[in-house]
Image (cartoon, rainbow, N blue to C red; front, side, top):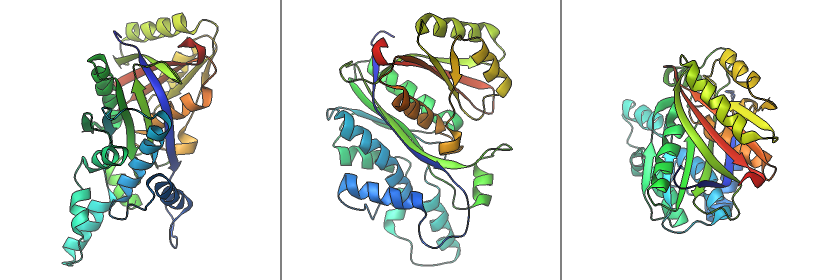
Length: 310
């Protein structure tokens, strides 16, 4: 990378989701409402739940890192706002006249990114990126390209909320056996400034699992960087276990890190894994490798360092 990209203020806010009959809000919804009130001083009553979920983690990162107004916003989502369209469509089918005009606004794909920019007073580039299971990876790539092109700060993150019902989740997002649904929002502030950084993004690679030479290059790159520092490896849900085991076995001192128990499985869960991993490890020196995959055999590896390796 021609300009070093440093990672600031990683924030991860997510949980595994279980469907059950309940009266009122569950604990996650209550925590979300309290955090919105704390950050914004109000409930954002006109915003959808998806927008509030995105804003909570994004504004937490902004509060910690205090980036300048020229900061760009790069929001990734695999499924977008699910609950608002479901409610509007149900009301429309029932021929009800109770649809709120704010629902139509909130269904726009870039409304959440607009809210974040407005609430944080950020006037830089503003993009919403949706590329399925690799949505966060594409957003991180676009933000990194912008940094390489001269942008000094970027706020990049992923957000996806649970479907309104098990049937809808099954239709919209096919879970594999043994996977638990989840939802969450996780963000990083990217910067060219090393001061107060918690880590540094070293490399991103787009691979095919069939090319052994590509994976050997990943092994060599990690091994050359790690020296005597520990290596932590995390992976998205679509990464085959044999490939992950082979990758870990080829790296000295490598330890797997899992986040599925905390956040469950959703399209932008890689954002949670990276932000939480960096938060847990820093300020200790360590090399962290995250591997993501989609259902079409495409892989992305993201290599970053923490601690005194800056």
